[in-house]
Length: 290
Length: 349
Image (cartoon, rainbow over all chains, first blue to last red; front, top):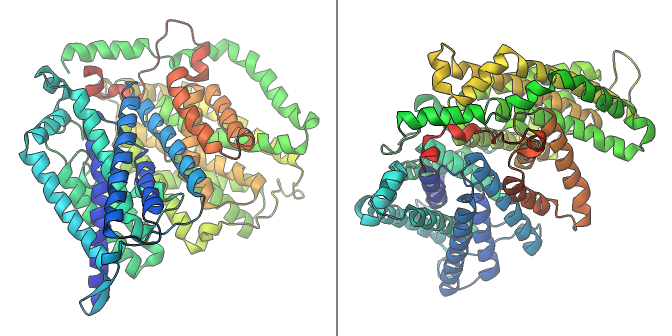
């Protein structure tokens, strides 16, 4: 029984990371109908920032520095992607542009860091373990779960309770009407794109001590984030949270119980949700499209 | 979006239908171009060395995959990143058939085609309810899931893939090893598939698919069932991709999860965009360009093929948005509205 509880904790840690990563993907899609296929590459650049800055072990201050550097890198990449995709009005072209950028980023990272598997150490004060349910559990993962909770609450208040959040939600619902009210929706879009990419890069740093960094990780993370967004409902913040928690659990339990079939289970979970609720579990009610 | 602009944009889409244009114009002129092209392709092994011939074999197999992507993306307006999955299903089926059942290449192709149709039918019903970018997202999720399955499932070799497939034979004959003979077999199947796809594209069903792409609401009002039409073409495209997979392994005699990964799917979509969505010969040309860039040019840039391809993606979107086929289209024809043209918010912005 205890091993199941540990895997539930693992699932929560994974869910926290997935929420941070999928949020940007979902919001950008909801607002601009842009499928950002470079999202995984942005995540991976965050992970390699952790490799470069933190490496085999460092204090808390250095780790926080890595988070800030990754956030800045992500924001710059996101801003550039937003500018690039706004240059063409066609959605397929936009997706292709982000795909091209994803290939370029991934290849540049492979050139810079080689094709080896890199690991990142948890910051020194929290790299130990505590006893949970009679078993030793890494403190760092508990902190990641706490981060996920704080992020969820912060995003909830930002999106649901602040003026900026109401502008963002309104832009998701009806961009033209919002711009008719005198709000520069272009700035909102670039801002959300940059913030989402920054969160994905930060997710890359935080996931460093758990998943490491290696070529190909960008595709895996992009797939997980896509499944989270599809399950949760496109453009929905609560949906992204629910989808991330669900997929985190499915993956952790699948890895613990049936390691060989873990990837089947992710797909099965997505298929079940799509059969029962084609537009996701918590589709944004204000969103126009399914 | 108001009713007026709905009408306006639907007219726009009809005017801008570059896709139906070349297909129709090719009618009388088609044989004049096709016969010399086929003759050149058939004669190629007689004058070229083994290495260029094996390269051309791979291009032909890849072109069949690209045709299946074009069937969905160009003709039906459903951008897909999932066809590599069915390509891989076909490839795995062909290798397993070769390993355990028969080395007859015709049986392998038919088995791979059937497996592609079945796999597409089993997974496609999820995807065809969506359209536009959501369809792209779902097919990507399906394709990546199949890739993960191939990568972890021990029964099909896991990440090592399947090797040791015996050389193909034909109709009980001796094993075919010479690159030229394998090439002729692949060329023959590719031509048959091309002709079949061309027939479908010009058939009433093909017109239905274009109708669904351009104005789904109107097609539904006319009594067509757009979702069913999409499901049909999805299964068909799965079969075409499966046949392509069998051709791919008939030369390589090896398949690994890398053959159905994201990169292949992305390259196939890039080929369609380079070639021109909806034209059939354009994407085949695009397939040749893309594979040559990936395999040959990347050697000159220190093995950084993906870097070149990434830049190619960006360049194509900005420089040749209508693709190679668009370059020969009459001037004044606007680019096709494409799958995403149906999105309301886009025309509102």
